[in-house]
Amino acid sequence: MGLFDLFRRGSRPRMSRPARDAARTGSTRVRAANAADEQHLHEWVLARRGVEGFVEPRTAVSDVTLLLVAHDGEWTRRRVPSVDWAHRFCNTHQVPSYDAAVVGVPQRMRDYNRRRKQQGL
Image (cartoon, rainbow, N blue to C red):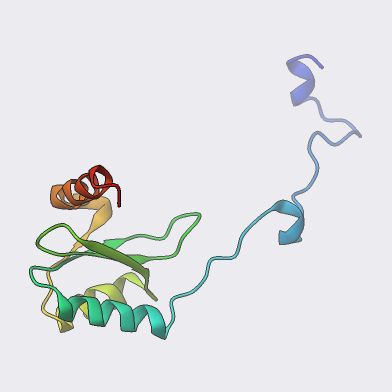
């Protein structure tokens, strides 16, 4: 097939239609946030000090998530119902919240991960 054959209109379809069945395409279904996620975040905030929240937007593989990072870099991440819900959760718990797509994640979290890796954990 030549380059210009791609642009010709003919009786032969150039591409097949996308499959409608998710099982055939390999698509995955994103798990929604649930009460267990909210409970985990609530307990995690109460058990640590210096916590900041980083709201991560929805991507192709995951829904909106809330990343909580403590003063020492320890962190947890859970799915949440929406961006607004995540900011309200942080406000309710007096935790500063940021949009992770804008500010990124804090250096102390990367340092924490590096320390754990060096310790073999």
